[in-house]
Length: 584
Image (tube, rainbow, N blue to C red; front, side, top):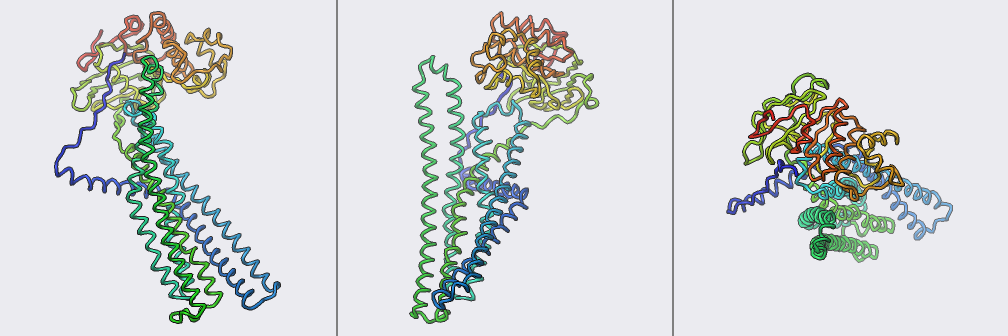
């Protein structure tokens, strides 16, 4: 087994005290402010699409006002003036044109809003990929792959509603009601007053409901990430659980985690339905009051204000506009839950992006892009927090094409030294150059105790490093790795399936498959971390024979191992002890 070079610091429990209790609300407010600032900065990337969506919504609203005005005029001409059908044709055509304009610009609005959301989500995923690359395997070693997948899929997708629906609708919820007020005010100022006084109630209740919805959505995504990781861990260990007779207990654990997720999900839905019911109630009451006012005004029971001047056209026009006045606010209330969901998801994404990662070493030795320069480490110091230094003033020079072995006791830092050369982590001090470039700049081969194996075919796994490779090249690489005979025993050949993590393959076969990828990609540098650990004698010898063929290909090999036969093939062997290298 490899030594536990990679350490993760467990979060320290918060100290009790009045000062900490008082600071928690401030920290929460600061966190919310940071999330909103981040979402606002994201929206700047898609500002043209957002503006186009708002323009489309405004033009659609203008067409709607024209449509309803012509409709009220049509009814008034038919009922009160008994106008002939021929004289009504221009009005009907005008209504049809307004409907077409309304629909066309609604399509423009929806398309632009979806485009803005797509662009922003692509940027967030690129930021996540960039962060994962900077963190590397070492930085992400303490994070469940299921949690990362949840952030990549569910949490990023949760941003869609905010940018595609809520953000444009927030502007339209101000502009469209103002347009309707401008139209209604000259017709009847009392009806306009009813609309103006009732409109603020909806945003007020939206804000009150949203305070709880945001926290619930944050809990929703946190629980989803934990549930995904919990289920994946049980799924990966299913064979072991069956052997130990613990499948029922594992099933109960998954059931409890799922039930917790269900409870939080139902709380979120309850808040959504309750808020929608409250908002619909106030909108319906306001429309009913306006309808009663217009009805009594037309019947002559109300004579003050503009009621005595109401006609069938003005009354019907105002009555048709009243639901449209509240419609943008209703839509905003529906999309307000998209905002709460986005804030909850953004918190998790921003926490991931703000996780500190080691900065790459910028002080390289020599000129860039020079393979013949080999690998050089000068005065390297590295240590984990609250622990003694693992590497102390370490220097190493490896020529291109040289095979170097690193041995030493478990926990001495052999794997960490390989991680530094790979660029998975950065030294606290010193300079590193790999072929005159920063570590991790150019592709390299890596073989550890658990090679990555994709669920798919042999060809799928090999083409991970060379997508354009032909079948002949794949078979040549497998022959060099000593796997061709195994492939020929399978009827499907290169299309033979391989399960996730190499289920059905021996440990030696899985590592030779990884070595076949190294042969196929022809990397100038190959790093090996205990490549023969945990194998039987026959598999060990097969790996060693394969590595000898690999070393003959003018490649630089650096391997950390305890195995004498593996170290015997090295041109130079160093012993790592007390943070420094010594000749073995």
